Image 1: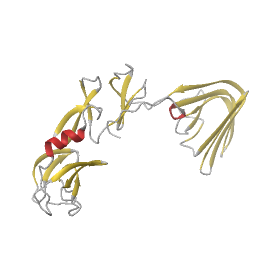
Image 2: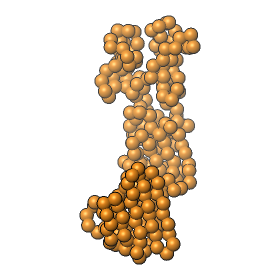
Image 3: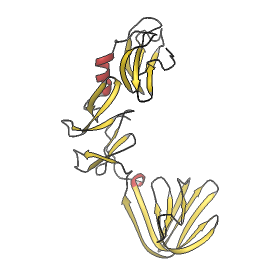
Image 4: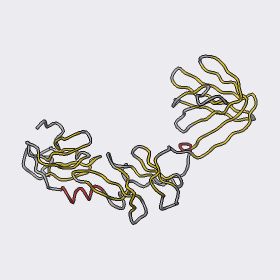
Length: 248
């Protein structure tokens, strides 16, 4: 969710598990043996690496289930549909569990723990305390900092706004509402369009439920008026009316 700060303890969902040993590696294509490491990722991806190059000897991506045992030696069995990957140690060399995260673009330091903040896709997360902040669609993280210590971001919703990464500090809803609430009229009944949050930001008719007109406010800036009377937006995908179905 956009701008929401979450603090959660490390769990299996954050852990990289590494097994090392002289192993038998069983796949649907046959059996290999060698001194390898087995990497188990939080999404149930299993990779088996030897000393040659970057390509795994065997792998199974996002398995439906993974079972592992450790009793002197170790075994890892991953199943995805009709495919099975099983690794059994003949001689176990070691085992370790390490904190892991999605790698992203550095965007500053976390004000809570001073560890790095990184952006991966639509989320900015801390590598230390597990703070996470969802980004609105189309948002870009800026170099500037909010008074709370978090990075600021730029978001276009009718106009270009700069605000804190955390909605608890500066909610995008309130900024857009202050600028555009009642700014446009409903093309069906003439009532004012109110800025609302229903999953995303909407411009919905004030006369609801008698009038059910509502439009998602796109990622873009208003550049004028459409022939239908609604605002026209400049977006990353080109110019369009507030009403995505309008061809005017």
